[in-house]
Amino acid sequence: MTLHREGKGSIIIAVILFLLINSITCKFLLPHHTFIFYLLLAVTFALLVLVVSFFRVPARTYTINENSVIAPCDGKVVVIEEVQPDEYFSDRRLQISIFMSPLNVHVNRNPVSGEVVYSQYHKGKYLVAWHPKSSTENERHTNVYRTKNGKEVLTKQIAGALAKRIVNYLPVGANVQQADEMGFIKFGSRVDVLLPLDAKVQVKIGDITKGGVTVLAHW
Image (cartoon, rainbow, N blue to C red):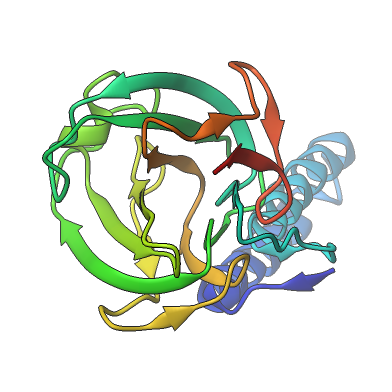
């Protein structure tokens, strides 16, 4: 397992705060309030471990298959439905939404290989990620991939109540590989995937996905 480069600043700040808080509490609490000192030490250490874990990148064998759409993130499948997209597409699409909790791996990966034909950031609100309007009203970044067989897949990285920073690495015109990094959402949230209606879905509501590994659908 490695740590993602997006976590450098956050981890440094967390370590500094951990050392500062416990240096102060050691001086004032340890001599006469030993239990309280060790309780605060345990709590702050747990928070430090949690922050570090946000940026973990576990070693995995990724799924590479030009006839499959893979999960762009770790999380739980919360939506599978036919929708009318609010951007790029004019026809109806099949939406699969994956909710990322703060405990999930936060790296986002390309669901398919192909050319990035659309990349757009949208300012917005910070509704909770499972809110029905989060897909259209929250801060988000949308990408559309065109595969070599002409299929187009849209991904939407969506901020939530805790996730206040979306990172996206894909400019229009880039040719990308399936399972390579698309971006990062700090502290979780949600990723939507919009597929053609003829895609054969391989997951169901409540399934747990692994980014870059779990197959969402086949062509």
